[in-house]
Length: 301
Image (cartoon, rainbow, N blue to C red):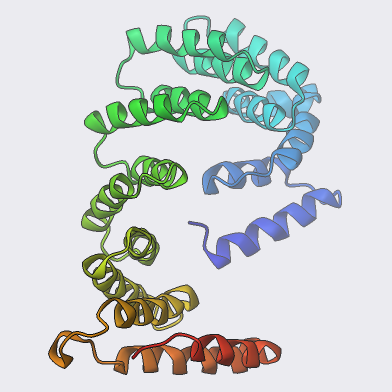
């Protein structure tokens, strides 16, 4: 996660380099350190160094890292000839490198040669079966072809070994949601909440899945997770506030005709509605009337 300070520093340096003020190498290092994607900028400023023998030699051994960075940026920008040239230089310098082998596989992906790319990754995995990047590249190939069952299979296999990979659990959950496999998605979000209980995004996503599954028990649980998302964001999660209102309305409809003891108090919905109205007054006053109308339409009794 990039902080505000880091983003400001990056934008300042980018503006400086774009206007000819120097600092291209520092900018490229910062982009790599923060793991942000600025492929067009990396390609332009990276090539300005690589195409200048004096600047290139001044980098020393760091020049190989720059070749790798530029090759990836070139593939992002579909400048495949530039990527191919950079990879050739790396192949010559590191003929047996598995890292360069990964770049060759990514280049095949960029060309749409899925079978060849998968074959290349499978070959590399034989030598290094615990390389997480290679496993993820295979998942990416399956997704790019719309082959979601295979993507699910490989992600599950990957998670058997790398159980603490939060990004992989989230990726798997999102694939399940896209296929309307909500029970499986719920399991993934449960794993994420267990390992990272203070991340509001996971509570919110889990609540969405539970609400979609429906039924009194699921919606009651969804309401609790919307409430925890609100708590974790200091009451500033608009989606979660709407979720509370929707859950309260759905529970009221599903428990209609039951004893009063079985019904929930409308207090939480009233608090959520008041928070939404306050938020809209400050940020979108023109839509306040629309919000009030929508909240009134949610029956709680």
